[in-house]
View (tube, rainbow, N blue to C red):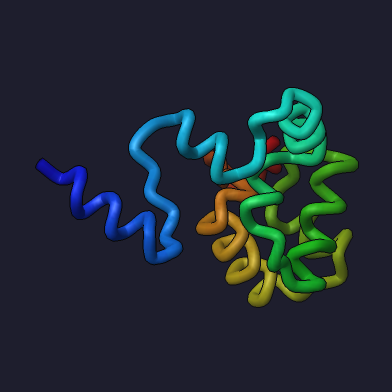
Length: 109
């Protein structure tokens, strides 16, 4: 019953995803080598490539030493405590980091 509507959406340039196969195709991961490259680079970060310079500092730090407390991230990046709170929240909303109890942050693969 929705096939006609779905064809209209797809025909106008929108990405219509009705299955996992559609998603893989739209992301360009049909080739095994391309998918492996995406996995090794971090698929989540490929989906959110628009990181600010400060966000990149945090990501680089967590790549070297994962699961750090917020205060340690602030000191090691040189970003003040108030700004790091907002920045970590933005990274969490983008799916780049995950917050754990006690203010520890984990970089998602």
